[in-house]
Amino acid sequence: MSQFLLFCIGGVIGFIVDAGTLRLLVSGLQMDAYAARLVSFLCAATATWLWNRHNTFRGTRRYGLFGEWARYLLAMSGGFMVNYGAYAILYTFVPLVRRYPELGVAAGSAAGLVVNYVSSRWWIYRRDAKAPAE
Image 1 (cartoon, rainbow, N blue to C red):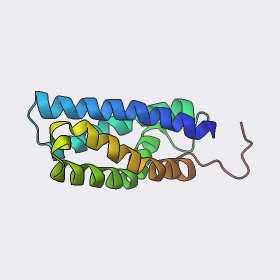
Image 2 (cartoon, rainbow, N blue to C red):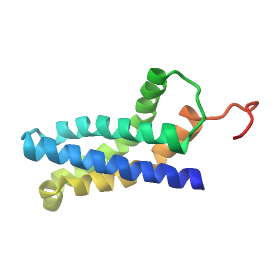
Image 3 (cartoon, rainbow, N blue to C red):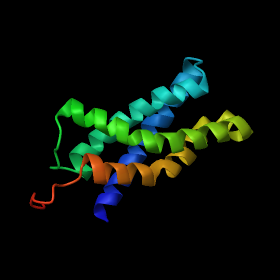
Image 4 (cartoon, rainbow, N blue to C red):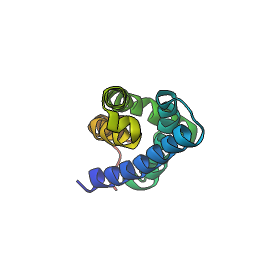
């Protein structure tokens, strides 16, 4: 359970990066909110990867640095599809979310949480059966 809580802390960090990047791109740089969400996801996924690598799944290394990051992004893509779908639907149909897209990011993050945890835990940071537990 502590591993899941650490994963959730990483999710909060990712949300802050995601929502902050989205706000900067949409409000500051006048970028399209749908395209900006793709960029903000990459930033957030990289931030959560760094957190999870050093905290949540510390010591579980199956791949080199770039290979782990690439696999992590691939694993997060399932959760991102759920996340982005929730965001896009809310942004399209809920005026409050069009005004505050961070609300859509929050709803999408909650929707993708379980998919992302399962893919991280059982694919990217899975322990080998013969490896000793830490």
